[in-house]
Image 1 (cartoon, helix red, strand yellow):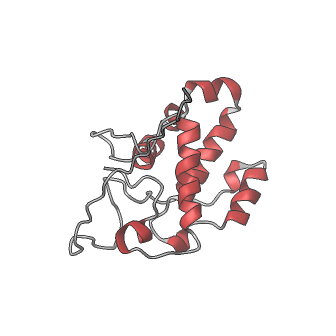
Image 2: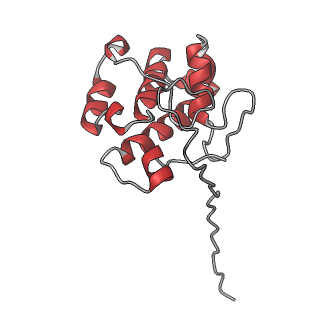
Length: 155
């Protein structure tokens, strides 16, 4: 089950940080570029999250396969790849590793994707290369939140 747009520090411990919105923005960037919804995403062979799946594709040199066909047709490939890279920077496990929103804006406005800092494996991905051992932590059960709308009609 996906944590949607929740950052790891909030999902696991209920801690707020100034980088909560940065994490959510990163998920949103990946959703826009890939054309896939994080909440409805599950690819068992790679990762239970959109970010994890995209990361596997990225590190295997298949980042262009993450890009939705409609995005490919309407955007420059280098811009779409830059957005994927920025998405990864935003969904880092540790809040300190995520950029600030002002630096994200500067990176989006910049011309060179080569000037972006390297990213690490995103939070909530299946394959973890972190030095932090999560085995002693109590697993958290997450539920999927859904919203329904009703529109009243006059007689």
